[in-house]
Amino acid sequence: MKVLFVTNIPSPYRVDFFNELGKHCELTVLFERKASDERDISWEDYNFECFSGVFMNGKSVSVDMSYCSEVINYVKSEVWDFIICSDFLSPTGMKLTSYLKRHKIPYALESDGGFAGRDNPIKKIIKTRAIKGASWYFSTGESHDNYYASYGADRDSIIRYPFSSVRKKDILEKPLAENEKKLLKAELGVFEEFAVLAVGQFIHRKGFDILIKAAREFEGNVGICFVGGNPTEEYMSLKEQYHLNNIHFVGFKKPLELKKYYLASDLFVLPTREDIWGLVINEAFANGLPVITTNRCLAGMEMIENGKNGFIVPTENADAICDAVNKLRKDTHLCHQMAENNIKKAHRFTIESMAESHIDFFKNI
Image (cartoon, rainbow, N blue to C red; front, side):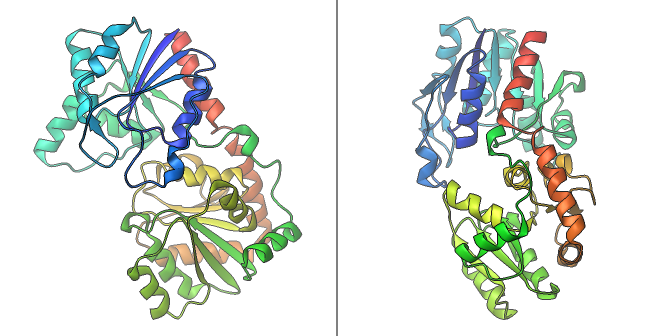
C-alpha cells in the first residue's frame, strides 16, 4: 500500500507518528520546510526510520510554510493508493488539492484540530475552497468535525482518530507515590507541598497570565512551575505586582528534564484562550496528573470528563481555576483517583493507536 502524506515541517511528534505508520505501509512524506523559525533547535533532531521523508524546495511564506510548486511532480511520479494533505491552508496545500480536485483524484485532509471561527467573507471563501471537496477528513474530535463542516465538508466523510505525541512505553503503570514525588521535588528545587505544572510558550494565547492571577487565592502551600521558555516582562511584572513567591519560571527543558517536572507535580493546568489540540494534555495524562484546562482546548474537551479525571473551566476565569486547584489540593483521594483515570485513558491516545486508526481506514476503503 503506497501512501503519500504532505505536511509543513517534521515536528517530533509527527515524525514519531510517520515512523509508526510507515511500519504498516509504504509511506512517503513531503515536507515544505526542514524546521520552523520559531521552534527550538531540538526540533531539527529527527530520524526517518520507517518512511521516506522528502524536503521540497520552495519559497518561504511564513515561519513554518513554503510555497513548493514541485509538489505536483511528486504526485505525478507514482501511483498512490492514498494521498493525505495536512497543510491544506498553505499555498502548497492549496495548489495540491486544486490539482487533485481538477483531476478527480481522491484525497484526505488531516489536521490536529480546529474551532469553527468567525471569518471575514474573503477568508471564509478561501478556507471553503481549500477544505470543501476532499474525499475524507481526519478529525480529532467533535469541535474539529464542526470546523470541517463549517467550510463545506460532508460529515459522512469525517473519520475520527486519536491524536497524541505519547507512545505506549511512555505511559506510567500507576501514579507516583507521595514519597517518590517528594524526592523529585527536592531534586528540582520545588519546595511547595502541592505542585502545579504549566508547560508552553509565554504567549497571550496560552493564558498563563490568568493562572498567575489565580495563584493569588490558592489555599495552603501551593506552587506553580512554568516550563517552556523565558517569561516576558508582562509575566514577570504580574508576579511582582501580586508578590507571588510561589511562582517559578524554570525555562525550557529537554524531554528527559521535562519528564521529571511532570512526575514531581501534583496537578497540570493549561489555562489556554485557545488550543486547537494541546499535546501537553496527552503528556500530563501519561504521567498520571489530574488536568485543569478551558473550554477552548480541544484535547481537554475530548479527553476530560469533568470532575472524573479533571476540570474544564471557562476561558479568562481565574476564579474558576483557583476553585478547581483548591478543591484538588484539599481532596487527595479525588486527586489520586483522577491520576489513575488519566493513566487508563492515556492508553487510548497514543502514537500507536493513531497509526492503527489510519491503517484500519486504509484497509476498509
